[in-house]
Length: 218
View 1 (cartoon, one colour):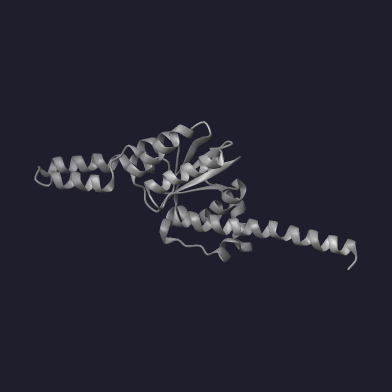
View 2 (cartoon, one colour; view 1 turned 180 degrees about the vertical axis):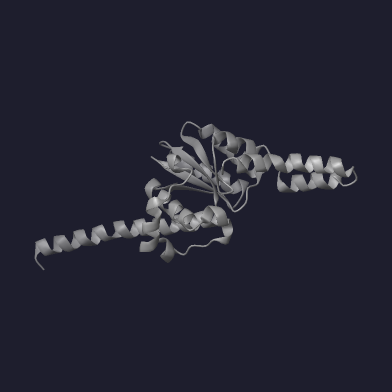
């Protein structure tokens, strides 16, 4: 084989994986978002490998489902828009989109008219901290505490909680709520109290969550 032909074949071989890597990332992001619709978006700035490692070890110690992943923001945004185009925000965990569906021509045509409520966050060097299917306020509080020493290098921009956009203040407020087990404990302690007082306490406890999470969907 002539050197020119060999060089052309080599370049072709080197160029092909770039497109396939993009498709692989798209599939990974789509699957990760469906497994964890609750997530935080952070901007990373020159963290050392040892710092990344320490943060990930800390997250694993808090809860096994927590995953911190650096993402290609354009590919991630496209994956999120694909899910939105299938009604992900309305259907939540009940909706599943296969990799073949997410990468279909129909899906790509539909997504051209779709935007998400966190599009402004998905720019530049970002990483995503997947929180899992459900939000546990104590876990979220521990996560924020772990990230605090790295705030200059890993800046919290916002995220999505219960399929609604959340800014930093929203996330902080949710982290200060009681856990589900804590709310259940409050219910048990109130069973012997008058019905009206019980209703008022329940409305207060659950109203805080509804207000914070639902106001972002409006």
